[in-house]
Image (cartoon, rainbow, N blue to C red):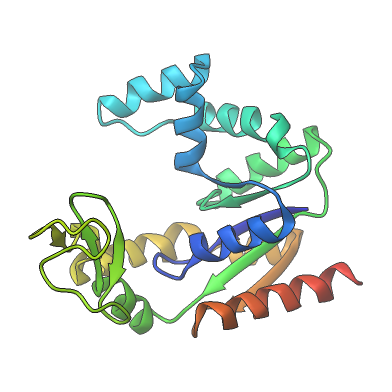
Length: 218
């Protein structure tokens, strides 16, 4: 099976994509995963992309598409995949469709995990990280003090800059301008499932699973 996950920041795409990955035994792939793997394997494309990132530059779309193709054509994706956070705009979606056509990949299920801005800001602004081990926590569900519950390091719990409210609002503006238009694009061209991202993880997983079952039984 083939899936694409998209939605606003903080909606839980990664969490749900990982659950789906385990259920269907197919890889969960993010843009970062593709770039890291290409560099780890020392592919020509991976080395080029890493050289740009080390200079603080964005990987251009033409290079990113080649890495996407390389990843999707690999053995690990032979039974399907879950793309998380890619494409990010209409132009990328159109080129990804061309890649799918060239690879004879059909019946891709698009999952839009949606949530209102107030809840997104509440979730993200309560996130905390450990500087020592990288563990992620949330004040809405985790009881924290200055020590990390994972590695027991003292004074390492902090709030990332991109989890501060003013930055979250800027990220949402970018999402609405560039990524949200994918909703209309995929409604016209693909199997689109829109899922309410509010609630507990298990509740959202059940909504996704139920919607997939209904779609695949048609």
